[in-house]
Image 1 (tube, rainbow, N blue to C red):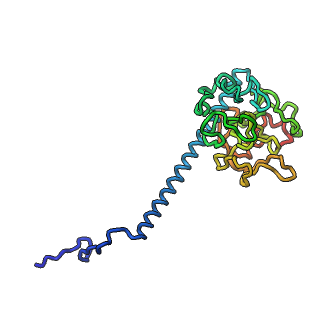
Image 2 (image 1 turned 45 degrees about the vertical axis):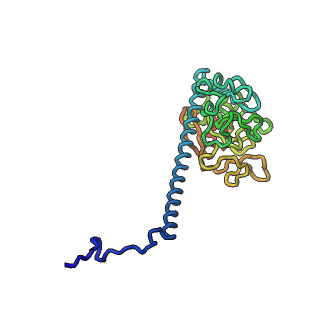
Image 3 (image 1 turned 90 degrees about the horizontal axis):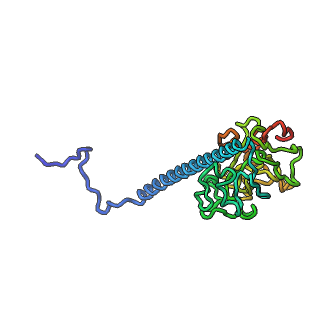
Length: 297
């Protein structure tokens, strides 16, 4: 019998690959590299989305904790709200002590003693008041200067709704027409429909300058909710995709752009969620009692 070698996987005899054919061809290398690059892109995109999702959730948790601390403050002070922590005056009743000569006492005043674990001497000690995605705040130091906000720069990401504060907001010469003489609630008992009234919000980097946020829309003093979790970090003051200024006829008027995009807020009942700018800048959500602001949208 002849001793013929047979390929058990086919009908053809075994064949040796020609000498020198052990290396991959250029086409094979390019295909492998392309597949690896595609997989790496998919992986990096997934990691980036997961990281941003984590930051959004962490930020939302911060906003809720701040709101609940303010609610606890009112419970301890006969339902009275704290002061707004504005840039123009430093009030001992401010909800947060943030100025250079006061921040070392942040843990003993306002909501500091209710929020807990606030330490002005370390970056992590102030993390409860900072969104982890807020690129405005550098990784080092606790008071990072912010151009245009006045020294030393408000070092946090969150503000209180200025109409939920002791005392009336200081609108100065730009006081809106038809604004009630005493627009602030001053007390939690004056808030109508608390579950729908914004108490704390994450503010846009271009309008934030203190702890006081005014959501009345389309005026020079308007404070916008931040859209940083939607990809608009607010660092570019001329961002055409998220404009701040109105027309040339009213160059100082702030407008509510990207109304459908969302930012993090917390309400007077203590719950928090991401809401659209349309909702946040509606009087049904920023006015303590919408019936007193009948001339506003």
